[in-house]
Length: 406
Ligand code: ADP
Ligand code: ASP
Ligand code: MG
Image (cartoon, rainbow, N blue to C red; front, side):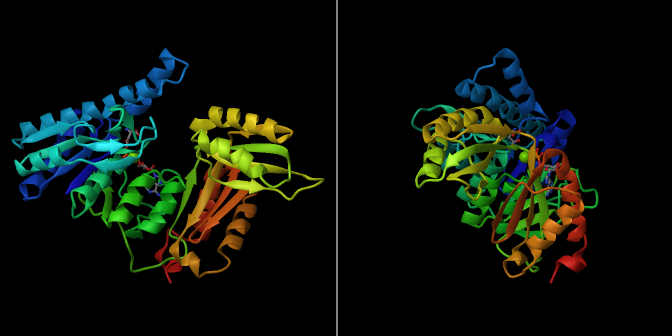
């Protein structure tokens, strides 16, 4: 069994002792247990803030050294609490646990796991506590972090490598909801959801699971159980198929992106490549792209990028705009994305039309659009996103079983 405890679940000494009791109970039931922990409470945010106070410059390597300390604190304290309960436990950093990653500081991807040390400790009857969110680049031996929410990815990747029966993600809500319960008070807990839908919700901004964790789950068929660390009731099971296939499973929103518009781009073959190639080379994650109809041989191109890459994206876009002879570059960081997700959309028509009608009835303008087979996303003004989420949640009645399930 692999269990992951998020920041709120290990926020203070009492919570850590509680968590240790839950782990001890699982261990005494005869399970081999690997535990992945996040940093306590808001530690990661506090460390990021501290770094900014000390320096205005980017120090990707040192930032990763700093941030990985957060998880290291939590793992050691958890191991101490377990040992006090008489449970043999050992804590390991990501690197000691054999979590091998790419070299990208701050956004590294797990590329392999050398779990011999974890397996050895398990075979000696120990509970192994692994620091989440971190790994090591096997070539440079540098320590890396996996991006925000990365402990989820550590947990599911370990579960896959160790062929665990299930990966439990313990968090501060009861499971995956039909919308962020902090924004929509009557959001409903979902009992079962497919990997496919969960991936769309997660990439749409439902931060309860990191997208990469869902990808690992899907690739290696590891059921993921998202549940509360405050009580023992079952949460949400993320798996291959579900009994029901609702048209709309949930609504997600994301305020972590910004929009860049390049004005009056000459409308010639190769121009889009000349803009997006340098962005890709710089490692900017472009999400939505919209190109307008051209007038007089020029067109506007807009796209969204993560807020945290805004300076880099602006710089690369300015250079690219000069190269292709475009007029100017605008950056707008007051945008948000709202997404409707549901496997039943594959065969249902009219969902997009209804979504647009609902947004217009709330006087919300749609600035960009993108769709997949089971998702429709709209970019709207930042201050309008919460009313968009609530309006859509209400209109598609995802809070009620009857209307969403066919
Ligand atoms: P942890 O520290 O346990 O990893 P996170 O803060 O990363 O917790 O994720 C849990 C939070 O995700 C919840 O507190 C909730 O506000 C937010 N959230 C956003 N969308 C959803 C959703 N659809 N279902 C559940 N929680 C959601
Ligand atoms: N502590 C890291 C973060 O806050 C990783 C995690 O919690 O999953 O993003
Ligand atoms: Mg998280």
